Image (cartoon, rainbow, N blue to C red; front, side, top):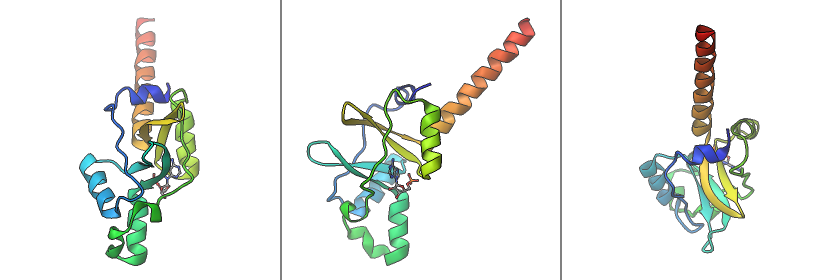
Length: 143
Ligand code: AMP
């Protein structure tokens, strides 16, 4: 199973923010869209970073709610790890577990074409395991 098979089941639109968006804007987008992180894109559509709800919460804990007026560029993570549509679901799970983050942008031909979360990956792996168990049961019952 590949990352492409997860993307196929998700809405075909990329939610992103810009470096000059405020943290308050990002919090509003994450809440409205029911997601945990967004890629940060420049005017050409190139990714310059990623920002997650965890970044915002950490910053509020350090400096107080006043940080919500600050811009994304001041706290985003610049060194972003991505996956490719042809990567296996299990390799992305290993990557997210090792690096302790829950989101991976999907890059194809230099462009960000989607995002997958640890929730998407776990859901897919559980579905695969259930399908495999059902076909083994079927095989045993039918002989
Ligand atoms: P998360 O668990 O995804 O909410 O993110 C935890 C931390 O890792 C935050 O500082 C994020 O900005 C950062 N982060 C999330 N996803 C990635 C990624 N794919 N590459 C690099 N950093 C990331």
